[in-house]
Length: 301
Ligand code: HEM
Ligand SMILES: [Ca+2]
Ligand SMILES: [Ca+2]
Image (cartoon, rainbow, N blue to C red; front, side, top):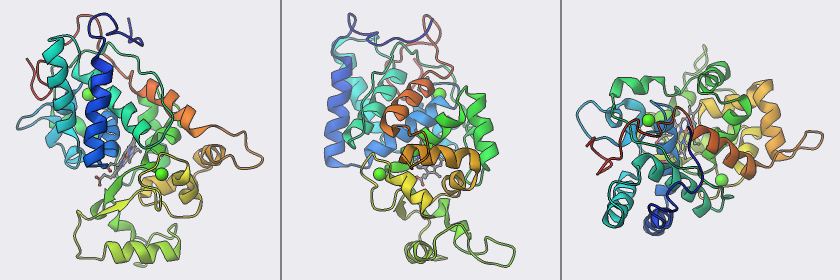
């Protein structure tokens, strides 16, 4: 028994539009919540399935795990949940609200929409230690592929979903290891274009602020487009894991297909991203009577 489109049609028909309006109004005052919510959904789904485990507050919950320290947008989910509880208490899961909010974030940044199957239940476990399975900053393509494969996602899903880096930013601390002392002779990562390296060094000098933020898709951080893939082709990826997708033949072919390069069987990034998101947002879902419907998203009932 899985999720389905329109799960709340009878029990809470306004649920989806409340999420959309909450995300939209938050986005209007602060556009960084769109990438924030998209990444949050990814980090939820990869740890114990898409069950809102990432939202729980407490001393040793997933939120406190190192990969989750820079997540943002929690207050948007809490706000949508409060509005929904006011009209249909105990019906709509936090896991579904997050899945819907991730989709709405893509639409707000001018991506293509898709229908989100709903009916997820909220999980009862959230442990910081479980977050160590999230991808590492220096993971090889093989490691990235293996991780996605373990979640039932193909190499095409990997490349499409990492294409989510078409919006948002990264802290200097997540990629500054590439800028110097990267090679054995002390040089920078040779896969960074020289002019781009100079710009990254100016933004993230050694000894500078590790929390300073830099667009993941240079020149197009606010728009859900294929520019991110073009930047990989042009040696202008910010994260090491992103640029590696161009370095490996298996993933480079997919980058080229998303770019519609001549001689490659082109793939529509917007459409494929939505398709892969539906797969990701069904990872290890809890449905039926498993788990619970939380009263507030930050605490187990
Ligand atoms: C191998 C897989 C991945 C790795 C290693 C990775 C790594 C990262 C890192 C290091 C950041 C910067 C975080 C920060 O400094 O705040 C980031 C940001 C981001 N990631 Fe990923 N990511 C991966 C896959 C994904 C996927 C599958 C999605 C969504 C479908 C995604 C969406 C995002 C978004 C939207 C941001 C920007 C966040 C913001 O601006 O707050 N990532 N990712
Ligand atoms: Ca989870
Ligand atoms: Ca972009």
